[in-house]
Image (tube, rainbow, N blue to C red; front, side, top):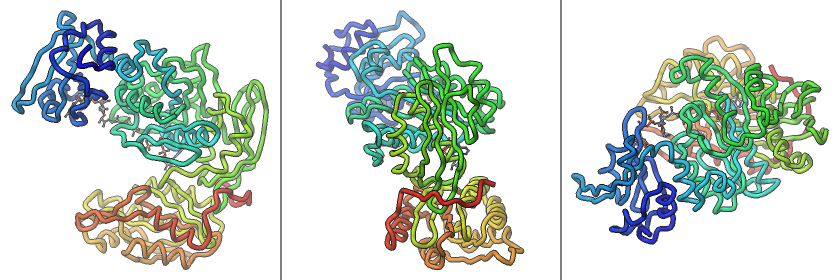
Amino acid sequence: MPGANLRLHNVLRYLHIDSATLCQRDFSALDCLSLDSRAVNASTLFLAISGSHTSGHQYIDMAAKSGCSLAFLDTAKSQQHGMLEERRGKSEHAISCLFVHDLQQKLADIAYCFYTGNNTTNQSQNALPSITAVTGTNGKTSVASLMAQLSSLCHEPSASIGTLGVNLFTKGAQQKLSETINTTPDIISLVTTLATLQKRGCTSVMLEASSHGLAQDRLSKLKVGCGVFTNLTQDHLDYHGSMASYGQAKRLLLKAQDLSEIVLNADDDESLKWQVETFDEQAVYWFSLHDLSAKRHGCWASEINYSTQGISFMLHARFPYFNAQQRVTGPLIGAFNVANLLAAVTALLAQGFSFAALVDAVSSISAVAGRMELFTSTKASVLVDYAHTPDALKQALLAARVHTQGKLICIFGCGGNRDSSKRVLMGRIAKQYADSIVLTQDNSRNEKPSTIIADIQKGLHDLAPHQSLSIELDREKAICQTWQASSVGDIILVAGKGHEDYLEINNQRIDYNERNIVRRLTSAVAPRTNTPSAQSSRGPQ
Ligand SMILES: CC(=O)N[C@H]1[C@@H](OP(=O)(O)OP(=O)(O)OC[C@H]2O[C@@H](n3ccc(=O)[nH]c3=O)[C@H](O)[C@@H]2O)O[C@H](CO)[C@@H](O)[C@@H]1O[C@H](C)C(=O)N[C@@H](C)C(=O)N[C@H](CCC(=O)O)C(=O)O
Ligand SMILES: Nc1ncnc2c1ncn2[C@@H]1O[C@H](COP(=O)(O)OP(=O)(O)OP(=O)(O)O)[C@@H](O)[C@H]1O
């Protein structure tokens, strides 16, 4: 056995390579796999494959320099399979290179053998957490996070994998385990993460499936029990070329191994294409902000109320074996979050969760950190959001407006040394959708904050008589003063920083955590409640 490493032994057995090939050196320390030389160390087995820009083969020396002692090299020549080469590059660090025929195609199985000891995908997957994949242009992060929270509140620890990294939820409490380079990681990173999560007691994982990830087959050989499609709007045409091929890439999810339940958005016509392409053995469920056609199973909402405390609506569920309805409340903002919550609940009900337990759990959920995150108080409610582009600011203000009973106040700035044309546009949007505007500092980098603010002001001429504009460069002060002067029923949207924990000023990063500032401010007077009342307010615009 090579260096008494059982994991490596399992992989070699799967590859039909004699373990004796690697008996000259000690590989006992190897305990993880990576496709990227930039992420390896002495305990990594480096898998060198070709990509669309470069080839891992070019980075063998770099991997050796980082202490890596073994690399598998992809080869198209079957006669090279199992050949070993000792290399000592310019760095003088030795690395054993083992050629593997068609390595790229074998990545998933290698990962399963390495981490679970089983050499069939099925056996290995049964040992790992179950997977729900969420795809769509918008809402992937939100739905994955809501599902993981709800699942953890009803059952065992659950996790989400996506743009916000790998997050483990236990009884609703979130712990960030690691960052991800991609929204949908490569198959080696995915299986590595699944194995880590399993060790931590996690039983189900909600995975964001990007169109790039699906098109590049990053989910290949991953057993995805349930798939969710949120919506399709224009995006990523640089990569996919046309809306048709972008949509088609998303629908590749239907071909995921073992996919048995698919959840579709009845309010998006694109879902009909999904329905046509489903396989006979796949059960289709639907969610909608309106009544669901009697022929369909799934969830829908009625009597939706938006208040400064969040959303509240009547949740209806119709499934083959039950019908139920119950009012639910949650600290989420905007009609799109009602849709996201419906998608999450539908997917969990489709997987056998109890309706009563889910309804209970909804009252304990939180928004994704820094994305329309709601902090209620005895004065205005405050929303912390990451919006830092004109369109994102517009969407955030539109979503906040339906919850506002008093004034909608917007605090924001713009970054320095970046696209300055957006400043005037963001000014115009604030003028169009907010009642009061407070301009402040964002990451000014090495631009003068006053110059940036002057640019934003170009979009803020001719305010209506009911509107007001003020400027406070100190961001924390701007928030505190605005909140102090606010009234019950007002909503303050603080846009631009979201989950970030720094401000970049004079090219230096200083500690700045807006979520903590707002949490302290609003909870000093009254603790945040997670149970919004069902009071009614204006409907969506
Ligand atoms: C264009 C694209 O999608 N590229 C993805 C693709 O890389 P690639 O095939 O081009 O790989 P490559 O750069 O040629 O490198 C070949 C091999 O050499 C290795 N390498 C490369 C350089 C090095 O120094 N050392 C090294 O070992 C690489 O790890 C790779 O194994 O496969 C890699 C592994 O899965 C991805 O990390 C990489 O995503 C890049 C970083 C990326 O930016 N992708 C974006 C477009 C993307 O995928 N975005 C979506 C989200 C979109 C959204 O909704 O916003 C996502 O899922 O992240
Ligand atoms: N169901 C939805 N429909 C339309 N817009 C949505 C929906 N859910 C969220 N959004 C908007 O899209 C933004 C991004 O949401 P989210 O992060 O959940 O989506 P995503 O698909 O993961 O996108 P990204 O990969 O860009 O993060 C939110 O701030 C919100 O403005």
